[in-house]
Length: 177
Image (cartoon, rainbow, N blue to C red; front, top):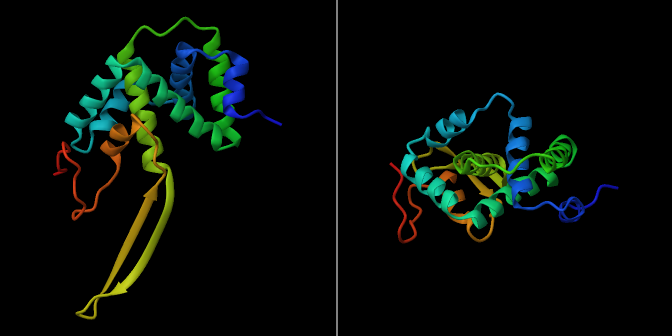
């Protein structure tokens, strides 16, 4: 029986450098043709340059948030079982023997890209209904609920979460075009 993710990290004595390096290896294994430049382009591809830049800047200045995001992405991979779990395991084992990462920008974009992948594919509940409008025509309505991360990750996740037009913005948020 495979240990829990927490137990595995403890067994491997995975420090911050191992976790951050493992995130890069995990993303490279799961998405082998994606470069840091491709990740950045995908992140800002939908007119989110300012929000993504703010998230990257926060990560580059706060190693605690980098570690939290890397753990969040890796733990989600571990929870998938099968190929994703093996990829996380292998990434951590490979990262243990490597030198610590120096380039914070690459780690930051890997973190945000990992969250982007989780948010855009980590659906908690999706419901589609067909309703009849007052004029007799039909409309399809889809409601999708995503798993919410806790703490400092919320602001990064919100960059990628789709909003309905009538949803109110929290104070300090910029409306999407």
